[in-house]
Length: 116
Image 1 (cartoon, one colour):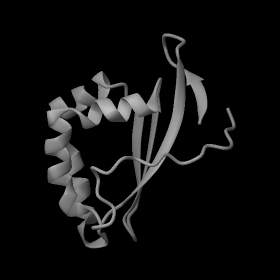
Image 2: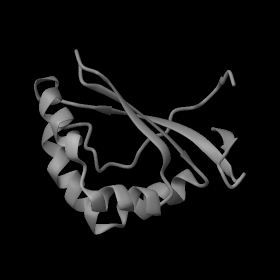
Image 3: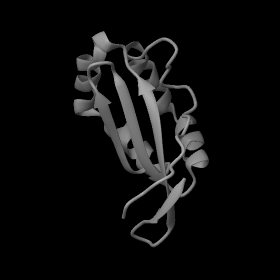
Image 4: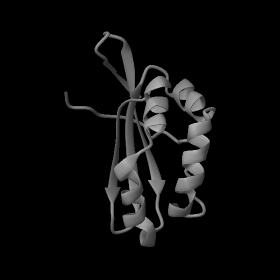
């Protein structure tokens, strides 16, 4: 993990993760993200998710997530403890490959290069 400063000049870690959608459900998954629940967005913000983005390779359902956080482990633990996350993950589960459950702990990729 590398770091960047946020607006308060606090140190943030850059983290990235992968998810795997069922290729036949990609369009449904995208449609579900057109209107993310306001309480889900609030929970993400409240638990420390900053500059959060999702990217998709539609031909095979590969999702790449990027987020910045002061403490990625605490961020994911706090989010996993919310009721809204549990509801969201139950709704999203049908879009993912069986071995790639969206409610499984995120495995962060190793960040090894950045060009500022």
